[in-house]
Image 1 (cartoon, rainbow, N blue to C red):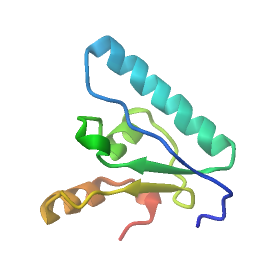
Image 2: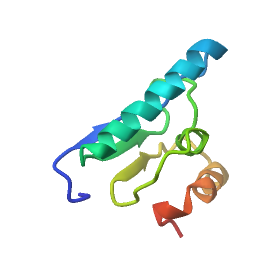
Image 3: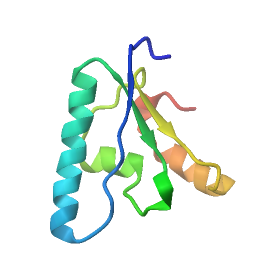
Image 4: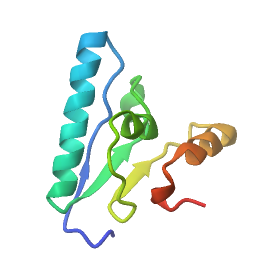
Length: 99
């Protein structure tokens, strides 16, 4: 899958107090870039352990991160309604190659 030796999972930042949020968002962006810079693929889980976190698309846009559709996957959980899934997929960056 992805033609990469490794797929690294990265958690999106939790929503919390403003100071910690900024640090967590910056840390996420740094990890995201480092993973892609090493040539690995990147996996972003949708809702790990049901904890309130920033959305994958929201975080990528907030940090102005590049999207390499050949090396990034969002793991979507099925607890979403069809309407929620459609909205999430509509927001996905065009470079993800989604219809």
